[in-house]
Amino acid sequence: MNNPAPRVGEEAAPPLAAPSDFPAAEEVELLWRISLFSSDDERALRKLWRILKGQTDDYLDRVLGMVAAYPTLAAACQESLGRSVDGPAAVRPLFREWLFETCRTPREPSWLKPLYSPCSALSSERSRHPIWAKLPGFRYLIALSFPLVAALRSLLVGTGLAHQDIDRMQSAFLKAILLQVTLLSKLYVKAGVW
Figure (cartoon, rainbow, N blue to C red):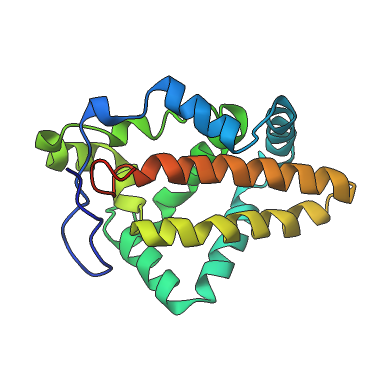
């Protein structure tokens, strides 16, 4: 059974699920179908990456600006970043990698699978996999879904794209983020509830 993630300020790392607990390909595919993710969405995400690949720092700055407007969320994110030896500087390459994988390979979230390591390897795995040190509590992952999409819109509006194209990219991006959060949620909820 998985335990819920610790609250902000708690030292314990969230427990990891066993490797066999990562959802089967059929389950992931069903989630994509339920979310109405289509080949049009995949094309929109590839187009989005072509636009964002040179602007990931600007995009992250916009997201962090939105987060800073909410002290509780900002504190949770800062605490996560503070656990890292590298601090906020380490976030940019991780964010860039996450954004690339989300846009280019949304159906194969390779960054998620290592998080489903055996519980016995929790300490060593957490230190070897820097994303664990960067993840805030689960409730904040859900809350961050919208700022990620809203910050994207403000960036895309300045590119001169048609509103229809911006809406399509936002919709596809939101679907991809929500699937990732859904897959992450299995690490935080009780067995049998997911």
